[in-house]
Each structure stands twice: as C-alpha cells, then as structure tokens.
Length: 378
Image (cartoon, rainbow, N blue to C red; front, side, top):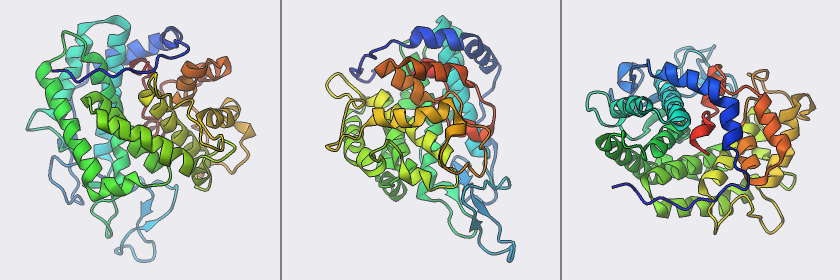
C-alpha cells in the first residue's frame, strides 16, 4: 500500500514548462545513457581500512592527510583541502546511483516511457532488495579517519546522495510499471535508515550541528520521510527548520556566518542555501509555508536568497575571500534559484538559473549538488 500522499504547497509560479524546455535535450540524453548502465553497489569495492562488512557503506574524511613528519601516525586535518588518496569508491557508487535514478526519473517525467521505470526498478532492487548486493541502511563507517575513527557523525552527510533516489522512486511510484515488491523493499530500507539516523549517536549528534551538517540532517530526513509517508518526522523537520535552523544559522542580512568563516565560504554558502531552499520546497504546505515563515526579528528565507543571488549572477562581486579549492567551478544551476522562483516568481532568479551549467561533471561539484534533476522535484 502506498503511503499517504501529503498535501504540498502549490507553487505560486509553475516553473515546470520553463524547466522542461531548458533541460529537455540534456535530460533525455542523460536518461538514454542511464538505460545502458548496470547496477553497481557498495559490494563492488572494499577498502582494507574499513571496519565494516561488505554491505556497509565506508568513506574517509576528505580533509584528512598523512602526517608528513610521522607518516605512520594518525592523519591530520587540512580544512578545505581534499586528499585524493582517501577511499571514496562507495560515495562514488552512491552518487552514480543517484545520477542514474534522477536521469531515469526525469526521462519518465518528460516522456512517460515505461522503459525508464523498469530500469530504475532494476537499480533500486540491487541497492535495497537483492541480498547479494544491497547496502545496509546505516552509516556506521562514514567519514572515517585513519588512526583516529572507524566512523564519525559527520559521515551522515554522505547520505544526501540518496535524496534523488528516494525522490525518483516517489515520482515513479505512480506508474503502473513500477515493481511493487521493489518499492516495498525501498520504502522498508529508508524506514530502517530513518530509524538509524534518528536514534544512533552519530545521527543524534549530527542533528544538533549548527552549520550545513545540521541543515543536511533535516533535509535528508524530510525527503526520506516524504517517500515513506512518515508524517510525524515531516512535522518534526518543519519544527526544526523554524526553531533551530533559521534562528541558529541565518543572520539579519541573509548570510550564513558559520559557512563564511570556512576555507570555502562561497561553496559552503551555496550548499547551505540550496539545502535550506530544498527544505522549504519539500516541507511547505498550504497551512505552513516555510518560505513565508519569519522569525520575530524578520529573518527569513527570502532575505537569504536576495543576499546570495547577486554573487551567483556575478561572482566577481563576492566580498569575501575565494575558496581554497574549486573556486572556478562554482556556481552552477543552483536549485535555490529555481525553488525560490517557483515560490516568488522573481524572473531574474530564473534567468540566472537558466544560463548556468545544468549538468556539471566535476566530482566535487556533483557531490555538493544533491538536487541535480529538478524535473523530478517540481
């Protein structure tokens, strides 16, 4: 039985025709490519440094490096500097899965072709149902650090890569060609993960983070709760947005100060704003419009979009230091522009979104852009 369909806020401006016209050619090309891909899950690769088993997701902290003075000692941190020698194959497999499912979902939205749905079911079965290849619904071994931690709470953020998987399945579940057994297994998997991320010490710790990690905890829980029909957790996410995220992160000018003090202030500001906007898009209802929610001092999401947009339209105006890595690769077609346009109808935001790259290929950009296929979200 399908979970209860939630009443969502109808966008003030229906952006689907404009988005479909902008993305159609590239989206269908990606969908055709996805039709040729075979499933690859976490069981395809294994790191000798993982403390988990073959079905456990494992990743290593990006900014941790060998100590040049004592190479055999625990790794040391270099904030913002990605170590290419760390194990990231499971994350790559998850990102690949997400891109495939988003592309197939977009293809189905554009054409109604059942072949896209059947291919999506094949990949979902490998990750969530097939005993030989499925991933365990937990992140006990995410963002490990050699010589220090077998896993860390910050590893929870890796699961945002599964958001477009859940959203694609959510959209395609209405198709008569969707495999009910696979959908049942997928919903069961995400229910199990929600139980883990809301009760395990790593998840609980991450839920209290005061920066983009806290935002991403709420974002992933909201998306997975919508797919599973978990109304209580959706209500909790709305409350956390109002009571924790906005008051704890947004300043009076519309900035996120905790992101601005990082070594990648531009990229982190974009990332956090995208996550906040995704939350507003997913959670808003006719009776509770998070886009219009204001704190007593007037802080709200519109001011965050208005502050950041000029620096996306013209990055040369950015008043802070440039990012230490990937400065040239940002911005791309940031989803906050599109989601905010759908709510407010400010054409300049849509125009900026239209002219930016929609299908980036730089790995760092892809993994920090969890909403990559807008057609399945609108």
